[in-house]
Amino acid sequence: RYSAECERDVELAKSMGYSGEVMTVVPNAGGISDEDLSIKRLPVSERQTIAIKGYDNWVGRARVALHALEKISRKFTDWRVVVFSANRSVIKLSKKISKRSGLKIETYGKGKLTRQEVLEILAQSRIYIGISESDGVSTTLLEAMAMEALPVQTNTACCDEWFGDSGVTITEISPESIQRAIEKAMVMSKNPKYVQKNRITVQSRASSARIQNTVLSFYDLKEKYPKES
Image (cartoon, rainbow, N blue to C red; front, side):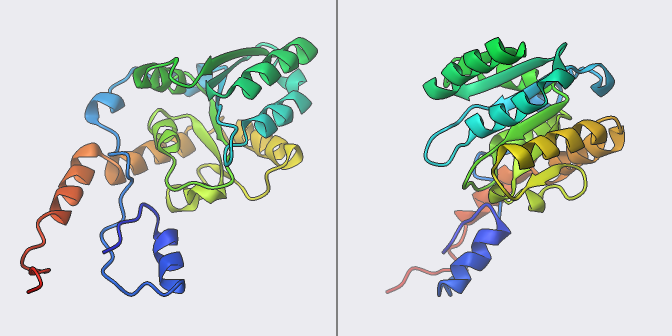
């Protein structure tokens, strides 16, 4: 049996010759709870924070996002930039860019913030930026959508399965393409319909109760898959 969190990956598995049973596609991290959804959110029109996932490793590309933001830093002189789960190289680069550009950048290393604190940051953010060479369903993407931060996400995270025109998908990881994506997201964020649509999507498709019931059904397969003799 195959359990995946992206329809994309199911098709990839089949293209590689997999012919077994496919379980219902659900996010691996367990979804968003009612308690998460109840976190107080700043009205989008009042938000002046940009949140960035700080991974920069074999797949993460947070440094490219920071270089992109530096290119348009003059537009965000009064804004707050929060980089969380940051690698050492990202923390070092953040300090350099802040000094060069005047951007107000807060950086937090991996494990320095609780999940609750990250959600609260997203609940104050106008946009969320997640850049990666590879991913499944990004948990932070779903959390950003739930907190009404407009997502800017690389298509490697199968984000097209979660938002269409209510976020910005990046197909090329370069400062120039990310810069254009940020600028587009800032314009889109002025229209509340996009973030409201994203929140409804998460509520309906990624609630922890719904996902829990689905996953529990994976373990109740005796009739469908009797033990082989």
